[in-house]
Image (cartoon, rainbow, N blue to C red; front, side, top):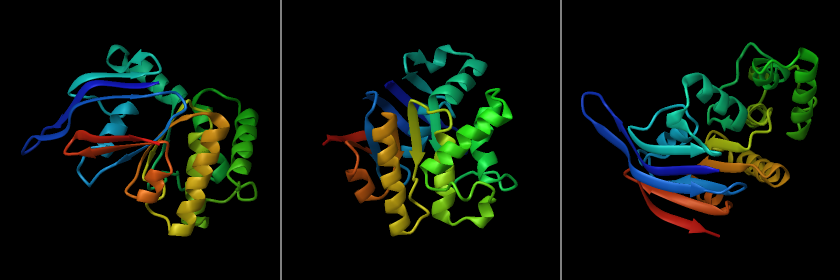
Length: 224
């Protein structure tokens, strides 16, 4: 499902920074994997490369059989749209749109009619226990509720791959546990491949597999 072959990423600036150093990795369909390591270890860089949000300096990334280096920009947009759901630490909800509108937006971008998109969005908001908050704006929700909306939006197309960057990082421990339980439940229900960046050992250990990065290199790969 996800393959990295000898992937490196260097950022150019006043000084050159090697964020990933010849990383090779395979994640099978349906695996739930945590990605851990200290700040600056390359976790978010790796997630962004897998999600097609950035390009590697060298090496090859394959998503569901498609080599990202071999597709056009339009085709890469299609891969992100159809195959990958993103959950961000800071939610990235549009503040002027209701929960319903935020969740249905990716479906509108795929050409869905308004009624059908809103029906799917309502189903997903029910799934994340926010069926009674569909018309609320993000500012009217708690942090945990906003993260639930972000998860519903990420799942709007039922993507085969879900990438989560610190999904519990901005939440209190109780709410974080609820969000983690929700992600696990969705993993079991949808059999999605999940890769989750986290600093929380409890979150990491709840996954089937933990990959540890340090200085842009995989130093540990634990399967449970």
